[in-house]
Image 1: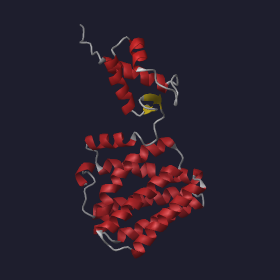
Image 2 (image 1 turned 90 degrees about the horizontal axis):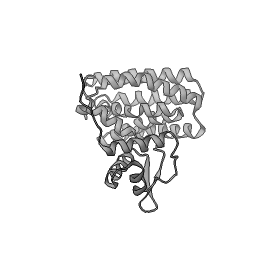
Image 3 (image 1 turned 90 degrees about the vertical axis):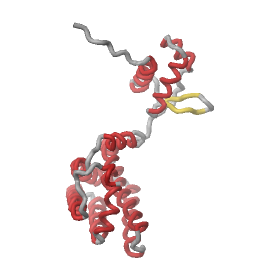
Length: 248
């Protein structure tokens, strides 16, 4: 009639309490964390337990060391947690199909919001990215390095659109989508040379819609771009059901 109790290690209980104090606002960004000795006395544990708890909180990006060894509460950067999410997707054997199903919704939404909220600096960065892509396609040698640079610019273009949305939840949610583009665009470009011109044409159309503040056009062009990406993926002979880690 009784089940075995699952008692978490003391350091986890301490780290959870410190995190709760930070997330609740009791400990605000910029405030110094109490010393190890002070925390040990408050929680009634050894300093070694507090030290391990702090290490956990530090790994979460909620505190950082300044002024020697003193710890201060900090606000994690928006993309600090993205690598962890990406690693989890890899460990879970997430497929390209699953990522694409998310991208076909998030990327047009990002473009729509960018058309509504992009600032002048955002549009300038997107225009610069598109100009670099056009110049590289016109004058670059058709080598693996050349195509790899085009892939970097492509991934950057979509990231810039996401940031131009100025929606922090969406920006964080779409970060792992780069796992969809990075491993496969190079193969698509190498096997389907026409894909480069199609990519550039789509980016120009999306940029034009953003500059005109036409949210519907920006979203629709992005949707078409994503459908075209899927077709290129399949024409290259890749299987959308392949786990993302295996296509690298």
